[in-house]
Length: 329
Image (cartoon, rainbow, N blue to C red):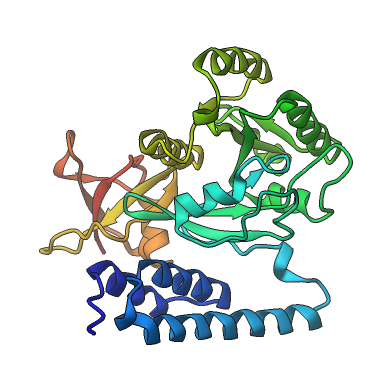
């Protein structure tokens, strides 16, 4: 029986050539495994992918056991940004990671199923964003390494279960544990002083499992949650529109822009944009493309959907999301 692999499989397979770390390779192989159609014709391919994943994980574990500091808690950033999921037990963090990324974290209907950091890649339009599932936080317990992981992240999703009777107690437990470690969750559009960036983290409350709660109760809970001065989005695994909105909010949380490179006389490519922080200039982009370009660049041309159609701009021009830049050196 033929495998009949979809085009998405071959596009994803290309990423293996540029993957630098075992962790990146594992993520790509797991994504490939999720794409492969499950039938008799793909049994050998599925087995091969599982074997590769197993070998990479085994190798990583051996390295971790001999290292002075275990890398399992220090997740290397990948993609356009890193967002850490935190929350009380059974709030649905692992299930949400699985839905958003097609990864396969361990999921159970009992507390503390997740015992270590679990990174996976979420696709948003034409970029990949790293989500990191983490062990739950309670009033009495938080993994000792978790605060450092949160401090190094670009943003936080605080996952809550709308159907939980003690929702606000659980919320306060998470907040208290984090603040004890000098981590303060703040609204996404808040300007954070650079010197405080390690401790003040942009966060979004994700109120999960809305399909299990009445609209009246949701309205009441949202009113109460608003006191935390954090933006809240309500979702369920059954609501694709809400999940799409969550992906968009995660992208905006990162405060980044996508820039497309265009070689003179050629068309721009849109499948693998450069990502830069908002407020970046043409000079910043040139430096990202190649360290020498910023110094050697004579000028640049810019295209955008509404404003520019190949106009010349200087190196201090501030870029916007999805600008197309042609560098001349």
